[in-house]
Length: 242
Ligand code: F6R
Image 1 (cartoon, helix red, strand yellow):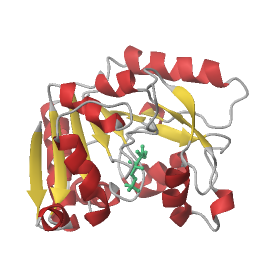
Image 2 (cartoon, helix red, strand yellow; image 1 turned 30 degrees about the vertical axis):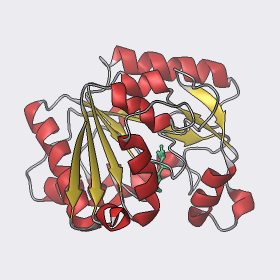
Image 3 (cartoon, protein in one colour; image 1 turned 90 degrees about the vertical axis):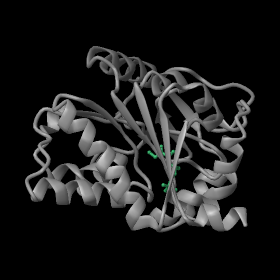
């Protein structure tokens, strides 16, 4: 596990976008696993800048997002499909048919989870998975629990996750209480993992993760077993250690 400590959020975003750029340059047909939330927004903006400057070509890239709110249609303003379209896809030359996000508004949820899992395998698996982390240690929406599910599944969000995500909604009651998420194995199968954490509120959970102990109550701790993980944090992490 490698940890990179950056000056600030802008630097973190630059470093993360450089890692993604290197991956695409080395393999223009690579499969990227993507995350939503506040943390990767700067990284996506840098990737857009690189595309506009002509140094990045997304035309053969395939993407799979970690999760989607259950019950939200892809056109809903707070859906992760809309987030990805607005914050990245519409600004770059990716083929929208090569972008994948679980469908949140399907009738048969089990079928959708199975379809998504199979689509990742059919694409040859994920080359680089971008992750954020919840203050409670969740990755994707794999919430702390007595057990962790391995494959894409429907999950009930924890109160702290709903609270954290309420900042993107008008009121807390609007935040969906369930989501479809890749499972721990779906994430773990990625050849390389890039986890971003910014701000003092993420420092305690990063410390917990770096202890190297495994617990289903800290889902991200499972990353200690993965052969290729890079964690990028900003200086708030160092401030926390002082
Ligand atoms: C989002 C996701 C979540 C977030 C996490 C951190 O697709 O899977 O695990 O990465 O909740 O969110 P932010 O970046 O908003 O702090």
